[in-house]
Image (cartoon, rainbow, N blue to C red; front, top):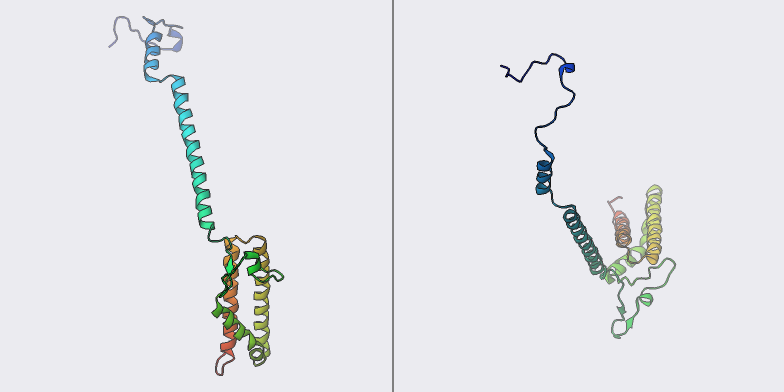
Length: 194
């Protein structure tokens, strides 16, 4: 049903170009916006406070990271060595023998390791001579590659003694050398092979 003021519109051209509202709506809209929205200065102040807090939090995280790194790295720094029986302390540079590619840090090796390695190296040539030519060539090439890797790693550690990755690689290379020497020793026993 249409009311007395309503008329049916059959085209857009039948609509009036402008309709004035019965009252001015802007004061109510403005009042609602002011009531719902905090002032811009307050928003900026709270945003600035959050950014300041984040900056302090980031700075604290960086300081904590550096502290943890120093705490972890304290075990990596070369320590002074002590001459057995004399009570004398040798600085790290003098503790390790200075050779070509020698590491400047004082690495204290296990005396059992040094003794076993010396024994295996002493009998190495005789055991290699007892091997077939093809096996001897493979073992010689492997031991030469291990020796080259050791020298390269020791040289790199001489330049960067606190590099944990290089230290781990050097230890792994020492272990590879011991495995190879032990395998040669066991392979030359009667009834065994490589």
